[in-house]
Length: 414
Figure 1: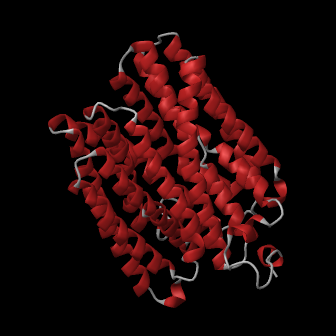
Figure 2: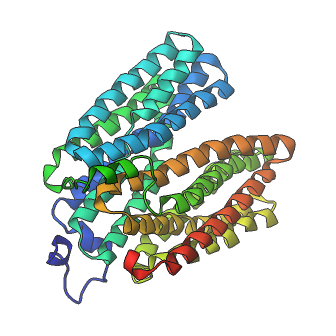
Figure 3: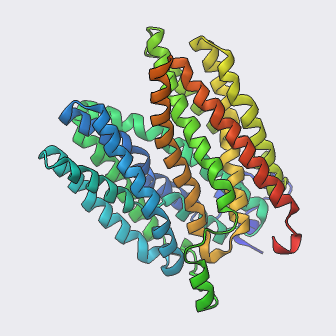
């Protein structure tokens, strides 16, 4: 009997409920630690924008420096996760945290001291590259503790909600701290939260996954540069969802400004977050018996249908209502894709595989922000939702292709 099964109340709790998995000894502690550990990734971009713009008055330069952080994450993230799979979390986490602190301090120093601008980009890139994906570390711990596919799917749904919450809570908190205590304090706050959460996670040795040694040297060489099975097909989905995130963010701000009511931007983005978190909590238990391919197909097609409806409306209130529905179909896409990937890879590369979705989202957000800015400059604030619609259709296309391919794959190879 697995640890997860041992803590289920027979006949009382629904299969795959969050109460079941959180009853596993140590689960609540490492879940909370991992949530805190995500803060640097969710806040470094906005904190850097606030710092650089305050020092230079240029939001263009600030956005470019923040983009270098995302590029660093895309390069360094898989390497850290691969090291965690090969060497174990206990060995890798301290190195990542220490290097993150060094490069965060370096970035703050070169900006405040007005060092050459190229050094700003270099330090920002290295800050991103030093960041380990805490979310994938926590998801790997869940897999090691939970035995049934239903429980594992529920844990992935839970972590998707945690991802949403850290991006909902982190940036506003850092912005508030920067506004009240100075822009440098915003960057510091996110790093401190990550160090506290990461150190706490590292200290929880009982839930640390066992290192799985790959069978042969040849196998290691073949797998070294190859993406884990299932990741390549889902990567465009996460990239496109990231573009939708950015275009909705920028579009909400633009629409509110054009309406002369800038406070509406917060309301619009708030209802999106509420819909997304609420759907994530419901989707886990409700879809627990669905095959992974069915989840991907249903969620991505729904996404492709709902999000383009933003093009039909031209008032902030109407857009807010559709954005709420868009939030409802967002987290199921993220949960379904992660669940599919987790079911296709072996334990020896699990952390690495689970890192790629967050990288796809981060790169998509960066690209989406740039593309949306260009589209708005040539049109109106409502033009941002054209970017959202095109990206959502891409989610549906790539999700359908991936889901159908998985359905056709022989059962023996699953």
